Image 1: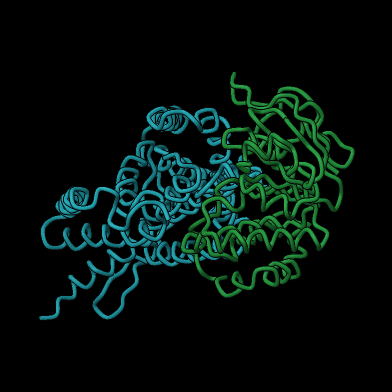
Image 2: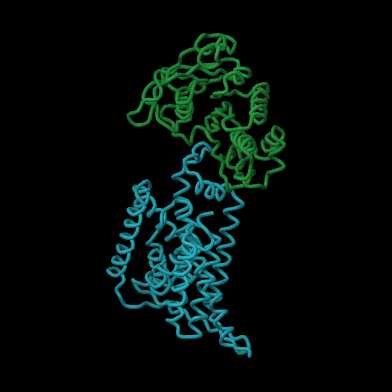
Length: 287
Length: 234
């Protein structure tokens, strides 16, 4: 028997997978190239969401201006994070790198609570749901999916078709030999951090259309994004892409068969089983 | 073109080079020979500024290099083919060559230089879409030399290009170096394959435990007692 609600759950899973894949791409890019995990990645997105909220809902900037401003701001935050936090610990133990970016997570969360308060904020932009026959889909999710897809294709073309993109992939493999190519590794790291920040900014623009903003919102998707990256093989951008869609299906279809919260439980159980089976991720490490 | 005047360098408190003086003139092929651990690789790493000289002078085309950061050396006309080739193994051959032409001035001449490299190494043209990690040792060496040539260097530093290669491949690598030498490239080559490298170099230096022990034309160097006894078994 044809089940329209199951189809809806699958489609919603695909749409959710798109945004998860975009989130995973930024984190994987940073890890693959700089070999550091930005634990505070979702908090950068939280700052970006507040930026869009204040620019649009408080200062009445049009969205077409607020969105690029948000992307630029978070890109700048990314470079600042690299310059002032990552760079001093670049050759330190991985645990120290985790701890400093974890420290930034709490710093940003605390600062956001002080500056913006704990109440939920809503952008006040409501997109009507799309109806196709008896099927209802969220327009905000569909837009997010399409933009995320375009962003990922753009990033793929940049990494494979340009000198700078090729250098970013090259430095991920051998950073010590880069000066012999005439490349200053620190410059590439800063550009990569700006790109990772820019992707977080883009994600912020898409998420702010769907969710209310509060200082701890990063915690509601930060761990999921991190798990998706690990599942796909940390630093493996294509693996992260596939893992995002897989994980989103578990959450969405699992939630359909049982209960929304059960969707997450099933997805995490799958994650744990997958880690026993393939500790380096379903699709292997960085590539 | 390149002048080293009493150069000293090392790693931390370990001193690897002691008062090394040598010169490479434009158009010359100069060899630095010596046993394992003599400091040959350190010498090239000091020239391309991957390590800091602790004393002495490093001069390229009349300008001191001591304070120039490593990534600016390519713009000064020096290309270094490092020990173990150090290709980007997951990038294709052509992407590796593209990295050699990263500087804006080199990008403008990318197509033309790519053609030159493919003429020198026709095998690279056949394999241009293959990832560098899947090449044989000799092909990887060709790719590494090609990558260095893509920057259009005036001075080429070669670190043991024959290391780890099958004998037939060693021959063809030396043939390539000889060809580059006759086409007017300026080359400073470090090698353990003494007879063969002195066969293509005009001059040479013998480096032992971080010090220059002997120098002269290739014929003179081959005739010195140190080289004959220690390295040629005569």
